[in-house]
Structures are given as structure tokens and as C-alpha cells.
Image (cartoon, rainbow, N blue to C red; front, side, top):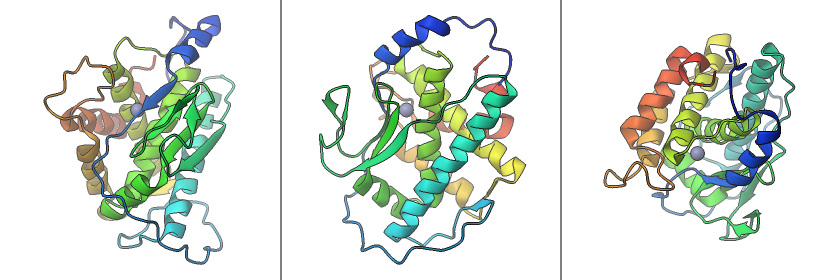
Length: 246
Ligand SMILES: [Zn+2]
């Protein structure tokens, strides 16, 4: 994670960061809502190394398994990065699914449908399960690893005391960190990709890019599809050193 000795905003300032970055609503809508299918019987033994599965596997049970795998992989990755930097690591407290607007609140504010967020006030990730299942079916399992990687990265930004003036900077860095986590996990053998997974990342980033007419400085701007792809693959190829953490 590089040398962060010179960073401002650590220590006591972290409290301000938490207050300011309450809910980073991270994705855009755009998927048709579909009712989840009835869950299939749970799968048994988990391999040591996570493998994204072939496409066309769209059951809710697989969706849930992929979410769990993605969270566990991200947690393991960031625990290692913090340990290597001599920092204490605390995992994000929990990951919750919701299906109705306002069903889950962050700092008293109900979360909207068709999104996934990291809520710094409660240190949790929340995602609209119908929206996420639709994206999983439309794009593929790799999308979930990106989605969770991105939200997990927001939690790491808070822990590292990173706070930018513009949402877009925060978001593009989270995309880079998600890319680094996935690229490093592939390089270390913790994650095996299958044919088409890289293409799924590209498709997913296209799907969550801002409308080209959106001003980059607007509150809630995340970056165009091109900007998000560039950040993600920069991290994917070059690891965390390319994400401006230090
Ligand atoms: Zn985000």
C-alpha cells in the first residue's frame, strides 16, 4: 500500500471522514427488475481458491454464494495489505441485502432501490438484491466481484482517512482499488477467472458509467464508462500503487 506516512487526515480526523462520507451510492440503475428464482439446494464444499463460474448459472443460490465469496476474498485481500503496512485491520462490519426502498437506512436516510452502497455511519455494505440479481444474470458473476470490491474499497478509504473534494475522485479511486484487488487476487492465485470474465468487468463498468451529459463535478458523479474502465484496469494491471493511496 506504499508509504502513507505523509498523509493528512489520519488519526482524529478520521471521525470527520466518517461523518462526511455517510452513504456512497455507487452504481446506477438500468437493469430490469426481476423476481429472484426459488433458491436451489446449497452447494457443498468450498474450494480454497475462489473460481468464478461459467455463465448461464443464474440461480439465487449461486448469486448468494458469489456475494459471500466476493466479500470473503476482499476481506482477505485487504487484511493482507493492512498487515503488510503494519496497520491494524478491521473488516467491514456486515453486508446486507434489501429489496424495498427505505428498508435499510444509513444514518437515518432510507436507501434507494437499484443501487449498492457503502454506509460509513454504520460501516456496512448494502445492496438492492433484485437489482444485483438482474445485473448478475445480465452481465455475469464477475460483476458481483467488481461490485463488492468497489464497495469494500470505500470502507478501506475511510479506514485510510482518504477524502477527496469531489465524489468522482472518491469513486474512480474505488474503481482502481477494486481493480487492484481483483488483479492481485488473480496473480496470487486466490481468484481464478474464466473465459469471458474480463469482458464481464468491461460490460459491468459500461453499465455503471455516468450519463455523458452529467457534469463531472456534480455531487454523485462517478465518472463516465471510459473513466471508470480506465481506473479499474489501471488498478487491475498495476496494483494498488497506481491508485494514489500513498
Ligand atoms: Zn462508489
